[in-house]
Image 1 (cartoon, one colour):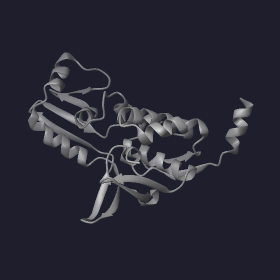
Image 2 (tube, helix red, strand yellow):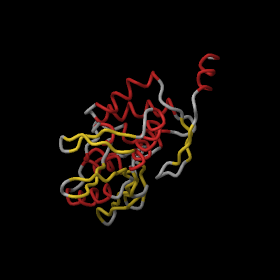
Image 3 (cartoon, rainbow, N blue to C red):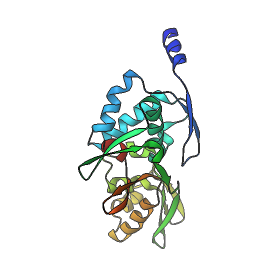
Image 4 (cartoon, rainbow, N blue to C red):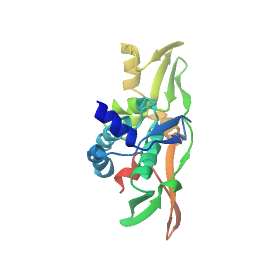
Length: 220
């Protein structure tokens, strides 16, 4: 243990402020033992596996926050900040089968952590909230339909509030399993307002915005 503490003390420490939760976070650069997780994050097509590796690597290099309580965009931002201090500021992305190089400092955040209430009927409302990493890890996949489910935090039924993560009665489960297709556009609009990282790249057709879950990792 003394050896590990000595090695830890040799690592430089940095700070950054997360763009969405506004938390100030201290971190250390990647280490050799992080190589496997970094490889998975950068190359794995299975985004759920990439997310799991992202969480593992953040837990290793960040000590003063609960990584599981972060939103996805804050976690991505933090990974990129650690990478910039461990490797360099440049990312190699593939866009339309062409390799482009961008600077991490050119990646920005938009939108904010939010919540919204959607009325299904006169006596049934759904409360949507920005999902955390903990919510996303519970999903089977990270496709849009599953992410929408992760956004549903509460069901208000006949004035009574049910927290989906704590206890769901048979009636509430029936509601969640039989949501009408008519509410899908409202869910999709909510997803569009969620915290997101993006960058602008120049193409022959003009400037193009690039964003999305884990885009800056799997498109390397």
